[in-house]
Length: 178
Image (tube, rainbow, N blue to C red; front, side, top):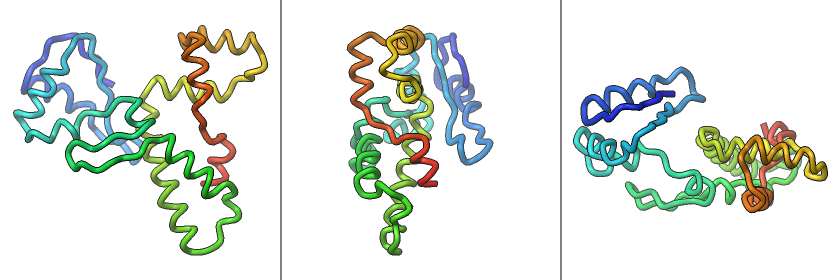
């Protein structure tokens, strides 16, 4: 992770940002950059200058909501479905991994589960997803645990209710899939 509290432009910005992209293994597909100043316009200008007009759509991450709900890739025009749709299909088509028998089902499962893992890998970088994962670990019938969760994650009642509507496969289920 790179923390930036300086107004960077063009070459200096690209040099600083490029240091986050040293890939160590297959699980680190990109680096994180936290800016304490608004560098969005400078970033887009630098990427456009040193790349082409569509490069910013490849380099910059989408929002958490886009990864969760789906988006249209600006570079290709292709509709990318969101994490929630992938989870829903995974649970509907393959509720019991032990019952996958035919070669076609196995191939379909591998493709779908790969899509799930790629989406989850990207979402691991968002605080909102960490909050959602943490919610899965608390006892919702314990008011003390719920209030502690809300305080630790700065979640109000409205956001808490919203988080409860999002389904994630249980960790045990994911282990069964693997």
